[in-house]
Image 1 (spheres, rainbow, N blue to C red):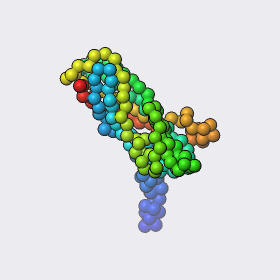
Image 2: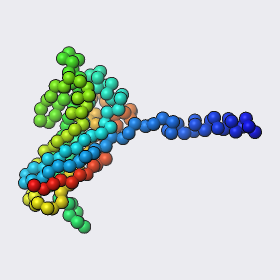
Image 3: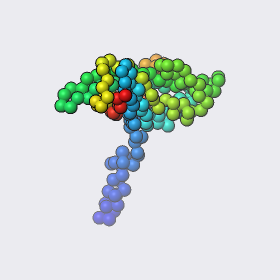
Image 4: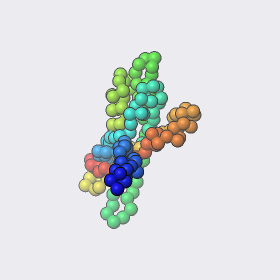
Length: 184
């Protein structure tokens, strides 16, 4: 009887492998905030947990990593449908250039050369996005930004796209995050 209990007790951890190995935290958008005025909204946010260690190693070996971010600005109405006032898709990518030994950060508004991987990851995950808006902006009325980001596999070369298609490491996508905008 004691032997049977010992065998069962020793085999129980095998039934729960997910508990013994911690999964990496899911990527999320946080700290969504900003301002809105006639013609433009400025939205600030941070992309967290987007670069697991394996992806950082791939970046260091020269693989380009690109994220597409969607930012929507809406006027919030109580007990009614919100009205979208502006929407923009923003692309940001980073690649290690082994010849010049710098990380090349490409944004929609230009390129930046960064000396180390930590600075490159910081610039890849902190955003300030300008969103053109239509319609009147009224002080004191509620406005909100919605943000979502996903890894853009289109920027990968064909062999890498085929390989990474089957890897959950490269399935990086956040849920929609929301944050209030202050009307000016």
